[in-house]
Every structure is written in C-alpha cells, then in structure tokens.
Length: 110
Image (cartoon, rainbow, N blue to C red; front, side, top):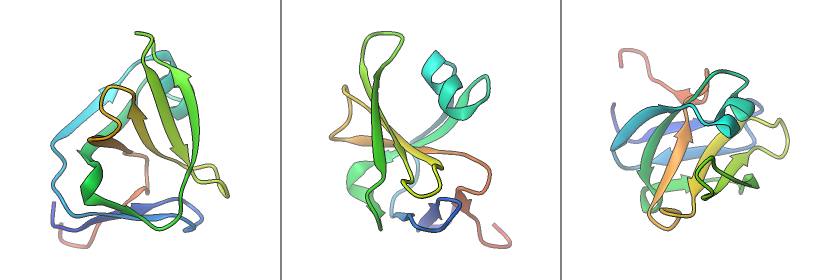
C-alpha cells in the first residue's frame, strides 16, 4: 500500500493516518472479536503505535481475551464503528486497525 495509509469511521468523526507499512495482517476468531465484528472473525492490520495519528480519541471498551489477556477495542463514540484494538501484551508498541468495509480509504489505482 502507498503511504500514508488513511481511514476512519462511518460518520467521519474519527480519521487516522498511518505512516508505516502494516507489519501483520490477519483474522482473529476469538469470541470477543466475533461479537465486535458480528462475524466469525475480525480482520485486522497491525502497525506501530508511534506511526498512527488519530484525529479524535475513540471510546475504548476493555475485556479479557480467551487467554485471559486484557484487550481494548476502540469505537467511534458517535457512530459506533469499530476501528482499533490493543492488548495488554503489546499496547505500548502495536495497535490493530480493524479492516471493516469502508474503514480504509484507498486511492484509485492502488
């Protein structure tokens, strides 16, 4: 993908810009990700926290993963779009960006 990678929520209250390539892409099938996505999995990209700029702070919901690790999921407080997740193991270093339909803003030709 071409840098910067940009995206945001459905109502456009929150926008983000990532100045680094995603270093991981994957699907999580834990029960909480199933609840938060309304699907059998949650697709996500991982990026360094230091490379991500967010225009408005999301509202975070804290829960425990299937393995007992604290997880924070970030939602837009206005429209409820799920945008981010972090876990207690890597919260200072990495953030997961949710790959929901429309969350990433992709330029034509990319």
